[in-house]
Every structure is written in structure tokens, then in C-alpha cells.
Length: 123
Image (tube, rainbow, N blue to C red; front, top):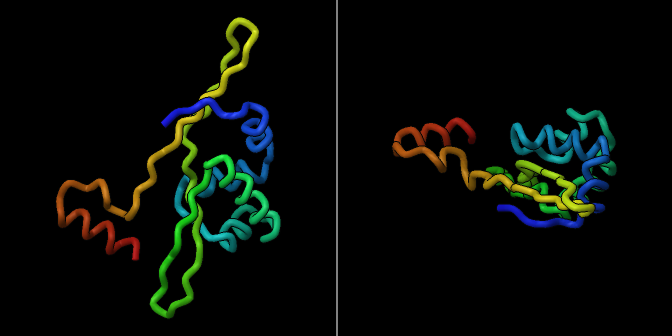
């Protein structure tokens, strides 16, 4: 998916070192705010502020991790795939491509056994 975003808002978010660290970490695997705070060495309020900014740009997706004990929590996954900025005849243009994150582990496996194995591994 590609679109023409507001260049100023896009560059503002991506110029933030904390936001880039969160995007980088969540591009590897979905992470909770607590996990992000620990891995990126930042406070939870800082993490939550950046999460909100990234969600407004649709760079992060929030998911709910279901727990057997009922203590469900949110995890965040990067949806940003590519950003390009071009200058043509005096005008800047930006395009954003977003990844289509898997709804569940193994979603794209063709073989049923492989799909089940991927789902089981991620429980």
C-alpha cells in the first residue's frame, strides 16, 4: 500500500531517535511497551508517547496478546516497510509503503502441518 503522506509529519516522526528504535525493535517481532522500554532503554512514558505518534502515522499496529490467566496485554508490530522522498521540479513528494503483517504466525504457510507448527512455536 502506498500513499502521499504529509511530508512534515512523516519526517518529524522519523527524525525522533526513540521512534526509530521502537520501529526497529518491532520490525523483528511484536513487543509490549514493557519489553520496548527494557530493550530500547527508555522509560515507559517515553515508549507510550512514541507509540501514539507512530500509530497516528500508521507505522505501528497494536495487537492483543491473550493469556490463559486473563491478563491480556498489548503488543506492537511495525507496519512501515519503506519510505521514499523525491524532489521533482521544485516539489517534494513522499511515499510510504506499509507491510501487511501476519494476522497469526504461520498464516502464509501453504502446508497445514507447517502452519500448525508455526502457530504452536509462537504460543
